[in-house]
Amino acid sequence: MDDAPGLLLKRALDHAAVWHADQVRKYPGLRVPYMSHPAGVVSILARHGFAEDVQAAGALHDVLEDTPATFEDLRTRFGRRIAQLVQWVSEEDKTLPWEERKQQYLDRFPHKPWDAQAITLADKIDNLRSIVVCALEFGDPWAQLKRGRQAQILRYDALLVAARALPTHPLVDEYAESLEQVRRVDDDGRMR
Image 1: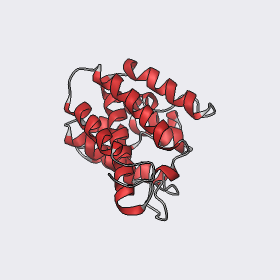
Image 2: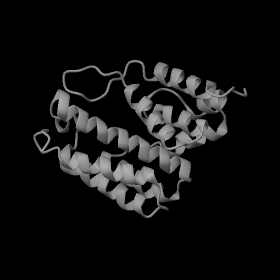
Image 3: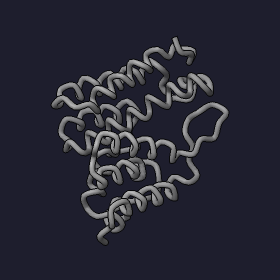
Image 4: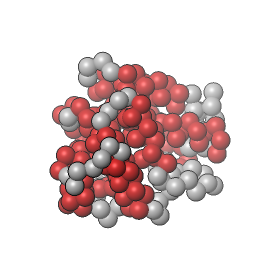
């Protein structure tokens, strides 16, 4: 199906909303619908001028990991390119321990196409911003994350090293700035 401008993204957002319907963000004592996250990823990609198909893949970036949706569902509804972009930004084996999954994801990052790297960076920027918003408005973000502050920051630092090896792009700078904001959230979840 050939979409008129804007329809592809709207369809992707609608399907993501359905697939993530019962999921919420990790904020203490507040039920923020999960769609807040894909919408944040899309807004970052749009602000940096990425094409609508990349934005659509950004809207769908977590459906293979976190919902019953399959690669074939994505390919049928959105085409091979979007399905492949989502596959590139998905963890390959969710049965592995957290540390192994995150290391494999990081190891794959330099080998992804640029559009998939951009979705990864936008995803992590939005996650970093969620940590800051949580600390400012809702309570300790680290208590909601299984591995805590140190393990999370180490993982984000490792991605920054990999991202800095890419050609210069404002998206990489925005990632670095977002990580610096998170560094100001202390072990008790308060902003310094």
